[in-house]
Image 1: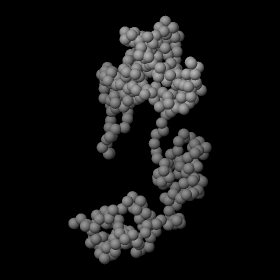
Image 2: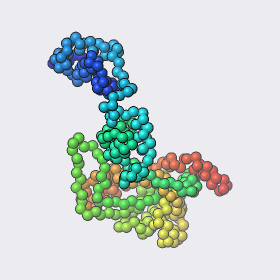
Image 3: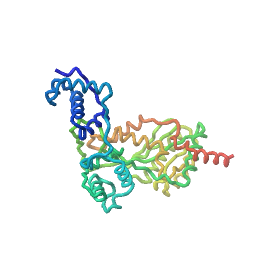
Image 4: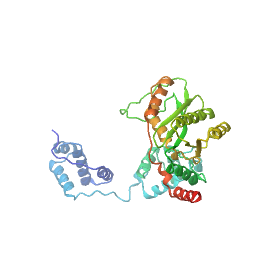
Length: 362
């Protein structure tokens, strides 16, 4: 029969008990074993038979636990056999100092630390042997986890605030017959981009590759006031693809009666090509506004392209490019994102540059 006595231990309490089990005296050790067995559902009769004690000893252990007279403390000075398992303050400081260094400083031909490198480096410095698994537990106890870093742009353009302020100024001063669009290009691959998803433990999802990879390129422009997304496709990412987008913008907004369209783009070479500059000189309706260098967070269309990866192309099962491209087109037609500019346009430096631009214009 299941036990009628229920003892619930927190994770910290279980860790303290385990620590004392390795160093406690006989009577205390018996009490801690009793609590663990009660926690896992054993009855007092089963515990008494297993630990060769009386049932009254089990009840005394429960009473001591419930009354709070049973204290759980970890000894400050651990026996020598604990070296390599307990993370002391000295080891914590040593781990922290080593993490600030690159493995090459210690003679390793690596760009990041591994458990084996940690173990060998610490063994050389400490004069004792330690395993990679012990180092892994130390790092977890010190608050470190194994995770991927994220790529970030440098975002060090000296005129960053001025360029963002100019875009914000045009956005705030738009007239009903003016439009502001954010433009960018996207590369679409037939080879699926692999991403994490929920899978039953012990199993692995396999995605069959489509053979030879195929790709196409998309140039898109987002009207930030209406949320409309206009796009064109091409076999290469070159100036002709961007010119195709500009011609589509010129036709679309000319039919709607717009006299000025501001196109916000980055400094990619196809946007500054000679053919593009000559075409813009002949079509004054379109005016290019430049984003700062290495500042993708200032372009709202980047979020749409990122969502497209998560919703459509990541782990997809299409075997050819046309059905994948058709699904992407349906997503782009339905996707609308407009409203306030990203928070980067409201930074103090941008506000200060915006005030200077308005004073100069006045």
